[in-house]
Length: 54
Image (tube, rainbow, N blue to C red):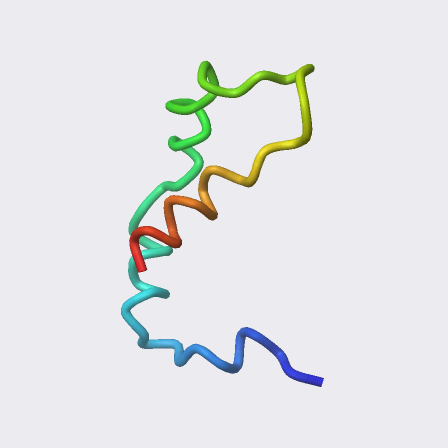
């Protein structure tokens, strides 16, 4: 079994970014852009932002 935490070293740049940036603020910024009762559930906006960041 593979533990994803063991794949990224503790001193990796992505871990430092994750510790320094509050990605929860992103939910507040995009909330008016998403409909709660229409269509399929959306892809998590934080995941989309992190994909672009990488």
